[in-house]
Structures are given as structure tokens and as C-alpha cells.
Length: 164
Ligand SMILES: [Mg+2]
Image (cartoon, rainbow, N blue to C red):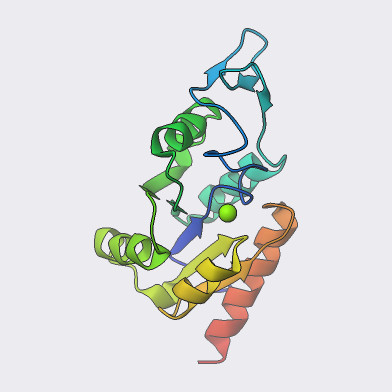
């Protein structure tokens, strides 16, 4: 059995959904009668299509999941996770501005999982650099999370373990 991470951490903006929650959409959000999630202007708000399947897959594999976002729109980000019915997948949510080193130090304290046993998906190079220095395996993603990106990340994790 391939070695799996003990914690998978996801950025939010441009990782789970294709926008900046503090800039491109207008909180508060709501679910309209047709089941779509909309912002206060009635703009339709969506996830990257495979995100629920990605989180389900990790749940099936028994890998706990956390969110690490540096957005200033804390309430809106949490609201979206609720409206998209994703809260149940996240064991921990670290959502506040600042370097993600803080987010990861808190995750490490809360979970007891060492940085070397974590995997992190983010679209921004600065976060990859900061968190990578802690010893977390960071996957720089483009075009949002997909099942393929997850599979590649998990494979990279397994291979990195084999090297040590
Ligand atoms: Mg991002």
C-alpha cells in the first residue's frame, strides 16, 4: 500500500473555486431556490467541478483534510464552504490573512501531524515557497483542483517518502 499523507491541506481561492472571495464576488452568499449558490448581486458562484469528488476521494482514503487561506473575507469564505456542503470534509479551517507559515504551525499543533506528513495544494508561488520551507510537500496547481491533480500529488508524496 502506497504511503499516504496524514493531512491534505487546500488553499481556497483559485484552488477550490475560480475567484478571489474578497475581490471578484460580493458576500454575503445564499443558495437560491434552484440550488445554485449566488452572491449578494445574484451572480452565480461555482466550485471547480471536481472539487467535491477530490474531497470525497480523500475521505475514502482516510486522509484528513484542512483548509489554509489567507483571505481577508473570512466570513464569506466560511459561508461558501457551508453553502457548497464542504464543511463536513474539513477537520480544520485556518482562514485569516498573513503568511501561511502561521496557518501550518497551527495545523501542526492542532493535529500533531508533522510537516513531513502533510501535502499542500495552492495556486500561488509565494505560499508554496513559504510552506515548502517548513518541509511540507507543496503542489503548485494551475486551473484548480481536479482528480488528476490529486492523483499526481499523492503519487509525488509517495515517491518523496520512498527517497528517505
Ligand atoms: Mg489561491
